[in-house]
Image (cartoon, rainbow, N blue to C red):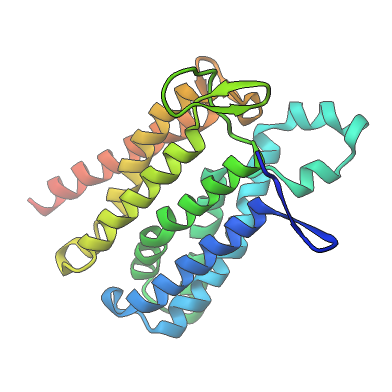
Length: 245
């Protein structure tokens, strides 16, 4: 665990550096691939800057809602600083980013479908950097594990679920990137991403051990959200196929 990088007299949070690197890589990729989605490069850049703001706000709000009991317990001891400095829920961030991009599309009368497709196209790339940040920060950690690829974290060997998810996201982005060269697949990219990631996230959550992510009954909050997304995507696709017939 290496949460900070020493630069002279300053300590810089590695998690923040990873997020910045991920957003930079995502924005650059979006601008370079904008024409594949029939979007102007300038609109691609500014819509995703909207999305970055929505990502931060949505992720933080969702974290506060899900972890309210934990937050209340640490407030008397540590104050508000830990809440502001860390703690984001990915699904909340994606929802906030999608809403922000939708607002941009309506504001400038651009195809919302194209912008949302572009957003979800780069999401796994950005997320892969974010999970690297989680690994260095020591959050979102895995279950105790003494097998292959174990890492020592929080006093014992653990399964590096952050690194596993980072690799998965990068591979998923690689698949979406290849599919983006085929026009007929462009409109399906959001559904492919949402379905693949939600199935993966539901499974990987069984191997996490950080209680701060919250749980409802047997499943974690993220697992319930994953199930809702899977059901929504499949229902929409079935409905669309019936409608086309």
